[in-house]
Image 1 (cartoon, helix red, strand yellow):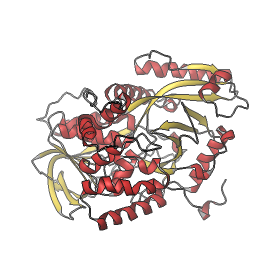
Image 2 (cartoon, helix red, strand yellow; image 1 turned 180 degrees about the horizontal axis):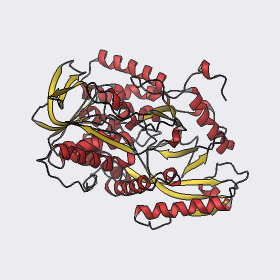
Image 3 (cartoon, one colour; image 1 turned 90 degrees about the horizontal axis):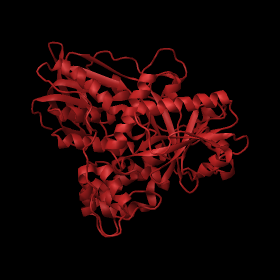
Image 4 (tube, helix red, strand yellow; image 1 turned 180 degrees about the vertical axis):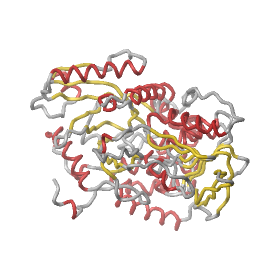
Length: 524
């Protein structure tokens, strides 16, 4: 780690920290980011994968948040093709009143207006029951009056973080995973840097910086030496992953849970079908990885069985589960978790700026807000904080004859300036996609070679998403993955075998189907 008179030290390698690093570096600040685990290890690899304005926020009257979100969604669709893409949503109407229907359509009209543009084909459209069943043929038909179709967007959240970090590096920034902050350093009451500990080597080092930015999200209260941050209410969102053939969807399907009326969704993502989400208080602490509880699993399966009764979905159909903790500001009311605000908050003290809250979609706006606070602590730094394109235009890589253009566009979106290198590094057969996913073998080779992989779960849960897309976390493919990646990583046989055992244990305990939990047996 180079301590070259840093202007900004960013703590936290999720989407918020990555966005701050990029916006600082592209405006001439000497900046470095450190993450105590892996990049995107926390919330930013465990989200619902949606880049959306949030119709729920609009219904709650949070117009500023909705407007900011839809505009940032449009910016990402424009600047990150191949990584952020449109997703149609179908919302079934089971005999709700015409007043509610008109209200929903009016809300969608406002939603479109806030985005600042209209698409070639309508974003909103009322369909009668027969037409709606053409979009979602497997849904429950009893009582179906019709439905509404609208557009939002989706992404691979971990790859978005990695792309933003790489863009920051192209502007001279440094980013290091597995480097923890042991404490903040102070002089005359001002934060002047941090004492860091590298998990790889065990070595400690003192880094000085004119401003330290705490962008650790749900972990914002855990930095030793900072003042008292606002109170957070960590909320857990849990998800299920099913094979696309078992829950086939051309559109995302939004539904209201039959038990409590909360919104639940299922949509096609990266070759599988993703189902979410819950919104419950996370009382288990933040030191360990979050995981899906049996109650949450049963809750989501109940929603699927009610909406898709003819599919006869079983627990065993679920490929994987995952859960993330959202950094939500605590209103102090202890009301329903879903009613807490998703706004972000920035606060500061001399030499320190901290930010938490917010959502994936608005990471650029959050970063610019945080930089405004940084600017007030750097009186000699003058910069235009108007939004800039998230990513510059990148050309589509050239591939061998017969490789589909859509495949190459996807690589361009996920890897930016390195997309051609991913193609060029591929050995024979490695541009073929792994069955059940959209991931080519070549992505494994490139990640092992060039993307700061230190643990096997880095490779299979964040650089690629195979641990979520393949049954048993991809156990059957581990021999071929080993043949590709072990030489690139430079791991001995003993190291690989230890990493493989640790990965499979982690997958079983945190990404597989949850077991029965005795204290929950009394609940339906």
